[in-house]
Length: 360
Image (cartoon, rainbow, N blue to C red; front, side):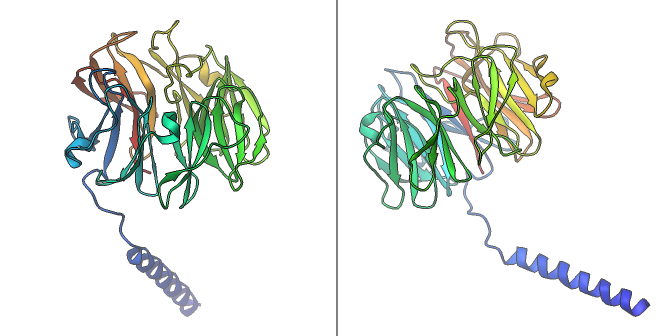
């Protein structure tokens, strides 16, 4: 009997060693000075100063300013009449979308070295970018959706039948969920780009929860769609969301990858910016009874406003010091479970933080 036990234990040890060796044989992640931290994407001061990419390195007490410009001397992220409004990482590349006639700029996600660009992407109407697979991506634009060949970095002709502004997009399973001004939630077949459905007239969207469902909101309803069947589920919000189109900005929502939590910013009144963030614990409508975070006095969400950092289980929040405008920018780091404010980094100037980008 003891021999059988020793034999079994021996097999277990061998299996553990083999698994460890397999992990050790795996190639290390690409190295670079911007690998461990969070990008801060600034719009820029319209008419005066271009947009910029800053960087927060984990453990630091400040931001590295003008990181893209430092790495790529002599290159610009559009002109002063363009706005750097959106960025995302796909296959170790950082895609920067400059609105109002600007280029699509691509850099290495870990070094920020520019690897390519398309001037006046989508006829100068580009708003967002999402990766589909190793060779394909999509641009959301002021007049629809454009396919992108990632291998040669070229933008194709606009997809037929989609004619209104399209903002945030995400791929979930065999579908791409796109936020379209006229259709709301516009669902595309990821292989063919054919329209597969229009489940509801979303006001804002979209993020994917840990449960796999795709979350957006219509007026005062938080609505999720099943990623395969497109079946909907709803929960009442204590406020109404507002459309991002016009002076477009990225969706003011994020979702945890570690817990069944979806976070959403309550907008301010009129055109002003809000001060409260709600957390929906999936399946528990009572979790929306009160704000999860109320910003420190004198601060207001700006741009997308909130992002979830799965490396730290933190919420990364961007604010300014005015309900309509402001020249004091802050990046706040909150514990995503306790809502405790862990760190505040302030930088002064008319930068207008559009969003943050976390490494995958």
